[in-house]
Length: 442
Ligand code: IFM
Image (cartoon, rainbow, N blue to C red):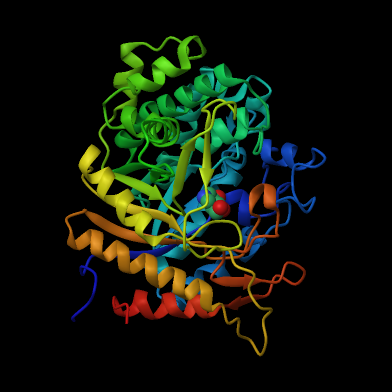
């Protein structure tokens, strides 16, 4: 068949546990830092939480069926650590949910991709310091060992962390996500412990999973200087160091970037060569979460980095971000030239729009269709230009709990009525169905 993507290219959808599962008090799950954070006044825009979310914990069979009708070839989901380990002890009921989900996926011909951490740290570990405590990296390794022992016979693609920048900088220094506090030193320590846990966990996972493919899923923001002045170029490089290179460099064996180590000075904890080596564990693939780009200028006095982002010219906007498909191409090409990964998956890409309400069983979300078409097209161009791109996961299958924005932002290609839990496939979902089924964009 004549297709726009290679025969073995994988098309799928992504979600995360706290954003869709609900059932937070069932199956022996212990509270996570997000349960706690949602209870703090003013943290979530609409005062909501993921307590009920999309009730995927109970409706997972229906959701798998839905994905099948949309021709998904793979599903990237996250495992909730607080379901699987209760007070540090393995909880068989918790893993049983994921085991049933995996069976259901395989029976439907959908390949499971499992993420170990999409932000829902057990509160009991936060009470001991969370990611600032080095011990959390060892607890993560135990958790990864336990989960991969149970699922590794059926799940071959594993991702350690989703967007470690959000966990550390956004969740601590900027206080916008759980746990919501921490100074720069805590943030840098947490970012290091997160990366360390990625490296340490690879060891048991590799011994538990035959034919394993292991990766990590950071977000990437291509950064462009707002002018060609030296100041703006330096500001853009600093922002790139803070957001991108801080995570990518150590994972790909380059250690922490020197310019940023110098910039952070005494706030950066001492890091041993053993840790740097452990983080640089061989990767089978890199997952890239791409949403938008940033134009950065020097801005003395404005926060830690002394940078400010300025609006890009002539770009459209989604409900929460600028739209810049070219940024996905630039991201893929930069990663290719800076790190030469063996394989790349786009592990998240999608957009929130103010969709029209469902009418006659349809949701006409033309903006999202256009968004996806433009991003798939540019991904295909990067593929033609030599990026070893193996798959594309649309974020997200369902409208869901969008963290500090609550349910006010809708990223799904399937509308979810949060009162009735009724799912309605949007036009973008049907667009995915056609592209996933045919491998053709037009
Ligand atoms: O919903 C989030 C997801 O959890 C992490 N990446 C960005 C998405 C959209 O904001």
